[in-house]
Image (tube, rainbow, N blue to C red; front, side):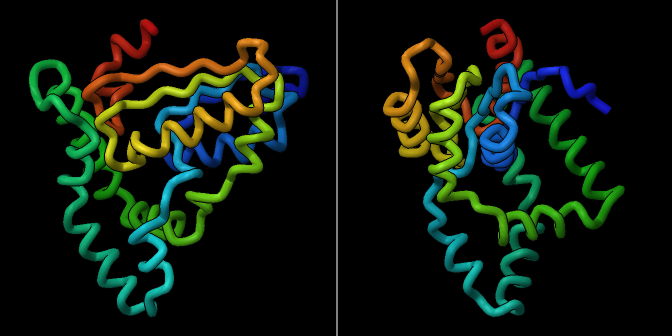
Length: 193
């Protein structure tokens, strides 16, 4: 249990970025900083919107198709596929396989989140965070296709630029030619920054 007087740093990735932003909106007084790594929350739902409206049998078929392509999806979070980056990619893929093998409900939990969680439309929470005193670091790989860099990075950046108090609580950093798992693929560079 964290003592009530303790403030902490949040580091949130993808869907976790949206969750962290909603959390920070409610508990900003508890947070020293939040680092958002390619956060969802302002994305275009596109095909997901269609899937959410399908009858349950059709959704189950789509879920099974996605499940059959998980490794390809995980590898798509990386770009270089060489050297240390490939070692990290292989390590992460093996960990994900192990997690999915040891707990068959992982995919079900992910699927329920994808079907129900507000991956879009959290503008009010982002504005609240931008207007708070919480330090925000927004990091993104420019080759990200999962939470696509273009246009999602600009959506987040524009809200922070428009609502930030100008007291340097918002900073961002882009990582060229890196994808959704940029912080793993180039972990030495990201940690240094």
